[in-house]
Amino acid sequence: MKVYHQVGHIHKWNLDSFVKDGCGDGLIFSPVNIESDKLTKINERVRNKSFIDPQFYLLKEVKSKLSTYNFFPANLVDNIQTQDLSDISDKVAVECIEYQINNNFQYITIPTRYFEHFPSDYYDQLNEGFIYPFTNYYSKSSYEKEFLLTVIVKQEQLIDEEKRDYLLNWITGITEINGVYLIFDNNFHTKQIKDAQYLFNALIFINTLKLSGLKVIIGYTNTEGILYSIANPDAISMGSYENLRKFDASRFQIKINHKQNPPNPRLYSGKLFQWIEYGYIEPMKHLYDKWDHIFEESEYKPVMFEPEFNWHFQKPELYKHYYCVFSKQVNTLPDEIEKRIKYLEESFNTAINIFNDIKNCGIYLDDNSDGSHLNIWMTVISMFKKYLRSI
Image 1 (spheres, rainbow, N blue to C red):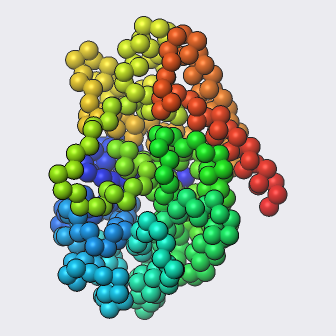
Image 2 (cartoon, helix red, strand yellow):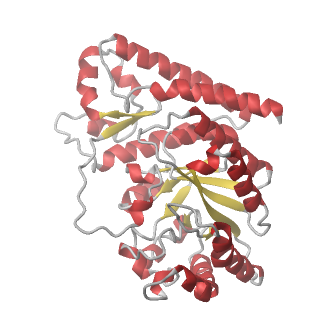
């Protein structure tokens, strides 16, 4: 299984990590965050191991760098409306495909739209606006790149079996595609997903796509990407800020005078499958003798533990350390699924025991720094094992 960098605001961190540190297998480029001409100047050896997310999610929002891409629909029609898309869909498909071909990306990605609430003609809109124009043009060409379909799966589509099956049937019925760029959209407010039924249904969804012969690359994943690995996706992702580890359509909205409180910096521990809020690190040094062992080694770790290090959520060392640690975790997963499941069960149990040791030392971690997600993930594994025996 591969791991791609989910690129965002500061693509230099991802490029440094991928090119200089050898972390990850490629990048998922974000047009809203990088101008077209800058993207085309990135080394071709990087581009041909990476792909672009066209980001048609909010058609009317030409946010930031999206204005530099000729294929974005709102750059072709002023004040674009849904009905306008049918008039320009063929041109959009040609422009978007040719851009990806000319820049020698690893895959050709078909975009999709985001809807907060599904319109009655949801699938018709996707077929007419994206699927037919893109597949028709591509079928007439001599290009040999694999075709990925962007699919956003909303929470209600995973929970409702009928809606889930309909979506799966729609995807697998598109015979021209080779795989899916899969994005799970949910409204959980915890940093780690702690809903067993949701995670179990996500595993079923991934597994069904794989059994249908499709490649599956999951975007916008946090640590749960490791759990998703037991459904055998081809790749997961890793991102710096939280809005790159969880899909949020508001990232593509134009906001005027919008201010947010900055998040507290967190440090990733692969042994714990958790991001630890930095305020707990000093107490750990005083109370937990093995505190240093829960944070894996990287060239960035010594810098972060220097007394003069200024902890801030925008410090690149936090994320470059994470990229190194997380990519190593992915690389150590056994190839055989049964062995992978056993490996993760043992790893999660080890993490749970470490969290218990930390608590026994008098350190009471908050809900977003503790291991409360791991017992749920162990339950999900048990559910998925039973499911695999039944198919």
